[in-house]
Length: 79
Image (cartoon, rainbow, N blue to C red; front, side):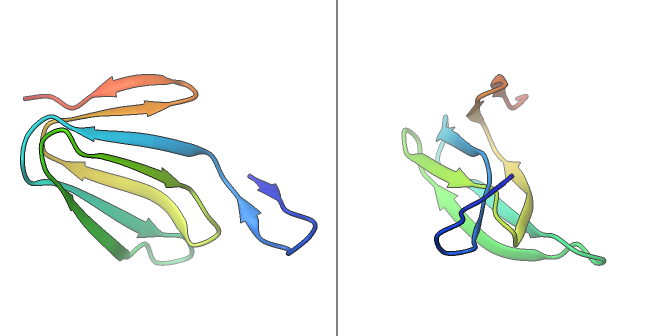
């Protein structure tokens, strides 16, 4: 992650999630000593979410059929 010198925020990688079915859950997990859920989104088929890792978000959990695109490549969830 890189730090934005103007406002002091930490900027992480962006990633894209595209739902392949209705009801795909995207769950953000916190950083720190105890990992906790801190944000949840529900996507319907064809919807796209662009997200970013931040100083508060260290991981994302995806439930349902989706395509996840990052600068490291593309991953599809299993059926």
